[in-house]
Length: 308
Image (cartoon, rainbow, N blue to C red; front, side):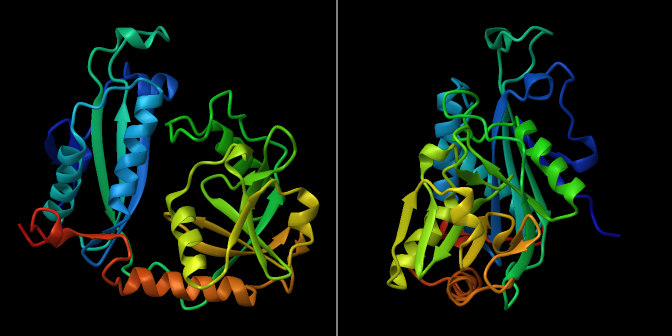
């Protein structure tokens, strides 16, 4: 019988079935906390340093004190992977405000809580050809940058949940959200790129997007392929008349957008530029080379996953 997975919870590794938080935790009551979703591929944690940096930036913006240093947080993540004997995994790191009362005042939460979940996934994230998904432009607008900004990767994803309801009703895979001005922002949990006449474009950070780590790595990769990416405001018209479009995200990887509002984008399948970027990214993840910003487990504490 396979042993139950362990979850890191406030300094201890506990069985998954016993990993519990108080109903008075403000992470549950108000979505008051931050998180990161990270991937491990065959003993390497992809862009770990960048994910850790973003976690602490998000926490700092909402004045949430993390009780671990960045080095301690990294080691806690790696220890959880090792104890679960996972070489390929999806990782969720979560910091909540901690236990308070029924009021919204965060000052009553005396100690934040940290938990890390690691779940096994297939070693090969990306198929040989890009997955093609269907989309709809959601009626739900992305929260503006001066509201509950999505530059903070917080526990409050109700904005995305509401948009997903639109896509469910439309019978498509994902919604595309506009910002408060009506420009293209992002998907519910992923960034978006379009290709028009050979030019690759992605919404500027002013469009209320999350500063995606996969997005940033793809932009660097495009430059390696001698293709610049222009960050700009993108209108729904530019999206709908694009030659190609694709999503990027930690869990999704890279997926071609085949249609928007039932209307095909280009040929309705992955275009040549999307396919080229996908192939290069797949190669980067599956066979990481030195200097590709992949964080090997064996270099982080000399602790590769083993049965323990």
